Image (cartoon, rainbow, N blue to C red; front, top):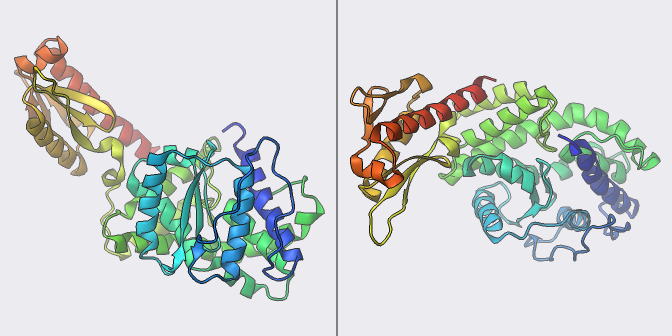
Length: 397
């Protein structure tokens, strides 16, 4: 992805530099961020003191200062609907986390990079690119659950305890690298040199433990919500692992895997099965969910059957019929329907799936689009088959 690595490097540098400055003022110090904003970046106030935790502590103070620096370097997305979705899902997960007392914040960074990160105290960010990358609320919930787990499991505090003999600014610099991926920056020079040395050891030991713990805790949180299918965390990590292997797709900071992606996917699959979770990847993919949409006007009744964002066909029988077809189509797909299972019956107007008549295109249906019923049926069958084929290719590639 053009520019992807350089922008992630800047993000890592910003937080690494911040915690180095804080550390220089004393262990878990309260020194203000001392650098100016990146040219062109919007100036913002520090996150409100109400964010973080009801009980202020060093982790929360550090997280707030890091968040203020991050928000000076990146603009925030103010889209009301996107923020409402992010906060709704995030707050539902945070409420069942190991640290529900934090006043978690959830914000969107205005960049197309596919990334997500959490800071001490519950300050959580996803990028605009990540919102486009996930394919359902379940996958977004998986990303957020992983991030919330890093804060709720106090990985900052644990890292500090593991390196009590080292300078605090080095320890926190390593944490920034852990959250955002490996950093190699000539721009920060000697300031990051010590952090780079210590980081190697800590990412080999603590990084693997923290990532595994965040994955498992994320699964547990999702199960506790009773709402979000934890398979979503598996499917998004699977795609990230495939993209990483191809070396051409997005790489997500905290989701950069230690150990490698395939091992991480296998570990997640095993853990999901150990929690008695049925692994049906189609259940967390919006593009394989059928829905009905009322398209009636004052002078006619009509409704569309959609698969993801694709229109399958429009029926003159109205919304109840469209809902019936959508419900049955969704169930057959969940049950494993494949491209080869899509047929048009001998009558040329009935679309079947796995040998079951799904719907028949009536003359009134055909009149809605001004085409012969047989042509409408063939087009609907092709659309369903194509979406199932695309899902299959993505799964095996």
